[in-house]
Length: 302
Image (cartoon, rainbow, N blue to C red; front, side, top):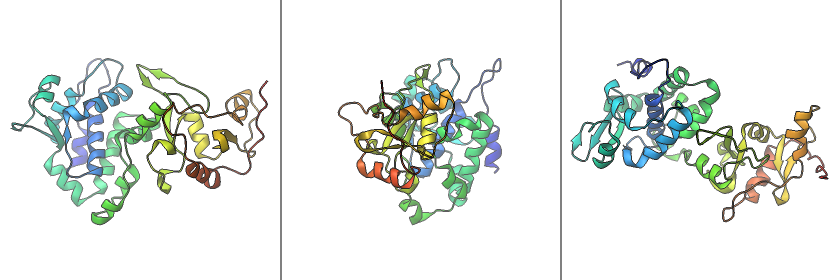
């Protein structure tokens, strides 16, 4: 069976050119869950809120519900649902999905195929991402659903190696953005659209690829610009949780001065009271391993 063809041909509601990424989003979420636990299941009542947030952030502006794809994806042959009463979906109503204990997971044949050919998961994810979302959103989407795309595309780890591989925590973004009250810790940017933060990201201080934990004391809420500059070593964190700007950074425009150079010496915004700031061990790792050269002198405020 050609699973890639099935994924590429997902039946979607179409009317007046309105985008309908409901099924692709659910399938990406399910692939991320399978990557973490091949035997896991998704109980509708337990994942409804997460799926609603995904639809609000990556779906069309009109109100929608995850109940629709949870039921209708079955017809595409890649998804199966059972309830407390037995196999089969009870329908697309929110109430009946909750009350029946509806639980979904990838179809049994697809689970077998993914077990035999792990790299298939990455190819399926690529088909979904390329067909339904712009490249600029691919990394954010993978983070949101907890999908390690690099690992999924190589398909290189099995058995004990899979158990030993660290798994990303897809709750990290929500925890970090909440800790910093949905504003950039460096500049205070707090944009949102339709109730969903836009242009804000959860940045690891000690990189996840270098044993950095998915914990609040290893994270910062940063806007897209300052996240990129932080990961490139232009910006860093100094003692007293003040912002460092590398002497090697060159920017002559007013925008460079305002968005980068003027940050030197400013205190980090957040986290909210009662939550831990960036731990010194993670801050020191970033300063030693990522930050470029010496820091500029703090800008005198006046």
